[in-house]
Image 1 (cartoon, rainbow, N blue to C red):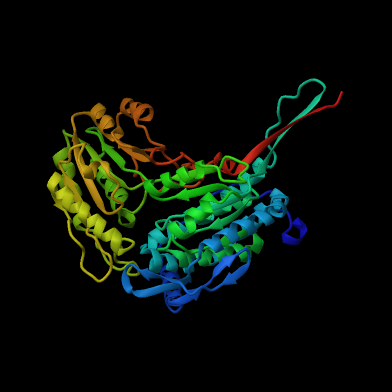
Image 2: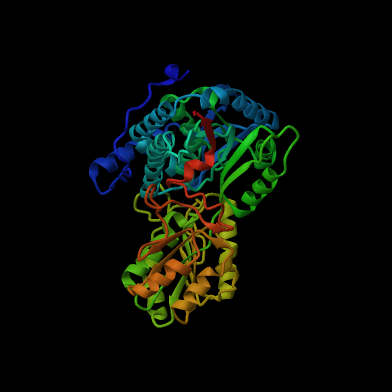
Length: 526
């Protein structure tokens, strides 16, 4: 079987992160402008369901929109039914024994080919992210670069795990351990990193020998369709995956509850993640295993600014963390906790920086912020802004930004109490709550006063305070004297504590183990 798919890969060179494009360079600007023109000509096309290599049209359609110009249709997608979901799981289960038996070196080689295809189509994928997800040029390119990183990194990690460390050898025995794939996985990616996270979860499952059913976000299905093209062109067998667009209620629950589903990899809201975990925990008739749930469910991330910090650097870090991609990152800073000794100065400096942020269509490179993802999100964010105005002092923003798209002004609300709603609840938009701390210990206490525990950052030049933060700031990803967004594959294994998920540590050396099961064999030889 493996010889008909691809040849096993030889040892690849050591992993290094994919460089992001510098759009101050004329060649890169011309390349993405060409890609935007090329992709714009494809907007409004129709896309079929893809079930184990078979394409199918349905009468029920989903239209994805450009959040910068909601009148512009990006893609028209056939919507799956519950019967399609059943069929996809059963097809994946039927092909699993064949795919699982393929050499790890062969699967890794296919994944490295996918990375190369992403490189060749990088600016094209940038353009799809601009149009369908509302990402600005730099944010889109970072998303594609991370997708490439996941492919490169997980291919190498699979090669490592295919030759595990030797066990202790008992006298007269041959003792060994090796890893087996699990079975059928359901992949439920989010809209905010619609390429990188989808690629990461999917390729982790495929390279470890599992088969998958992917249910992309209804906000970004066209990017998912383009990802399917890469999987096929790279050499993943058509039967190894399905791509189903549809609602969670119609399709998602069926996929999660199916007795042949072995695991679910999910990134999204706390509410949906907890529902998936609950559904997966209940065994169904004919089910032979306890389903695994690999979940990342967002955060309410804090940056602590100490009185001994480099204030200019801290202001920039909070600004970038709070308003990059319109605050629509699970790692985004939505709480700035500032020492009272520098509080007023920090707020004034931040206010001045926010005033310089330009908001508008994502395809216009002069805009620092684009739109939020859809009308519902915009309304929810603006409702939270009104709550925040009652809970604190409006420093910047506070309204919808001009334009036909889903534009929200970068908003800063100061003098917030730690129990306030905008300090505690995930808003997922460009809204920053600023709170005053008496001292560093109080700041740590406030930062930890959350049901989430994803990312956090501390700005201070005091080594003892850094030590305390390392020990006491309870988050899965802690950053010192830098922003709390921008986790890099291989350097910052990503995943959080508490209601932020299962601390899956995507992009780290342990991640693939969640898609594998270990088998130990002891053979008596004398």
